[in-house]
Length: 127
Image 1 (spheres, rainbow, N blue to C red):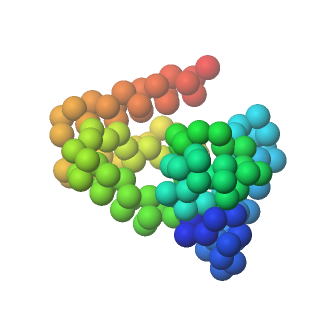
Image 2 (tube, rainbow, N blue to C red):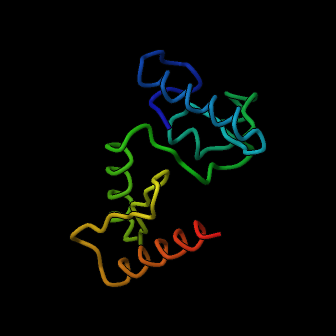
Image 3 (cartoon, rainbow, N blue to C red):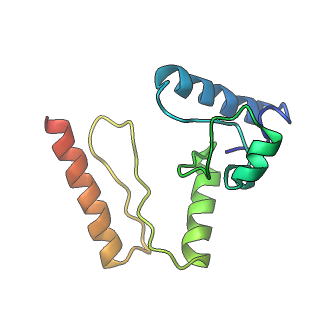
């Protein structure tokens, strides 16, 4: 996600997102990945088809990658609290060991969710 749609704004922040997208496409060519794009663009397939027909997305995006920790955390907490959703996370990836953060506002159910993710992560690493 970005404040730019496919190079409509060329600033270091949006260029970083476009470069990250290119890396994912190169390393995992079977994934349907596109960007950089604004959140509303990612959620509006008809708009996407009309304005960006070259995009491989045929439906609403179902995974969102935020450009940095600040924007990801802000969006995650806004969606969780305003939508009254049960959220799971944050899920840390790319670490040598299964490590996850538990923040002070978690409910018992949310702690169990995070513990479950840690267990699956640890079991997967044992294989």
